[in-house]
Image 1 (cartoon, rainbow, N blue to C red):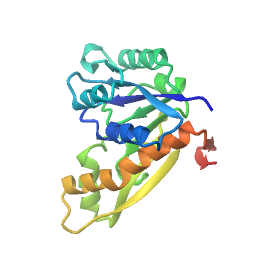
Image 2 (spheres, helix red, strand yellow):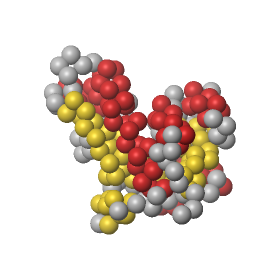
Image 3 (cartoon, helix red, strand yellow):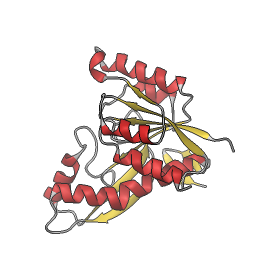
Image 4 (cartoon, rainbow, N blue to C red):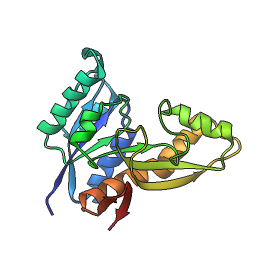
Length: 209
């Protein structure tokens, strides 16, 4: 089994990136290496995290491109130059055009801080997801790792993990619990399964071999 090149897309603090770096160093991700971190913004902490672990970085600032298509093409060019086998969205705040997804079918994954199909789709990101979960009064929430398709949060589901909602939760407290108890666990696990060639997609469903 050949070692897979993982490119991680970031826009901020990079806590999910850190979870992946830790998993790589702890041997959870055995058959893959993070070979590049691409940020849509300069100066974000995720770039420092990569630097500390000697992972090459690129900054492709969204505001330097006139539209989503031009930006998507620039990101895709970088992904292809890096020979990415897998692309992971780790708090990447820019929606990319279909052309990227089409070039990397079932080779791009994202973690979403809810149990899809709840609280997902356009506009549901960051604290908004947890605000809506609390507003609805759900007793369980969680996180979902899925392959990225042209439908926002609509790709085949790889892993999910449930997290308890408590009566006195604030969106910030719930966000933290979902990260710690779900996102940081299932994202590295899904990446490891991909790198071990254990994920198979049939009829929009993911089967773990």
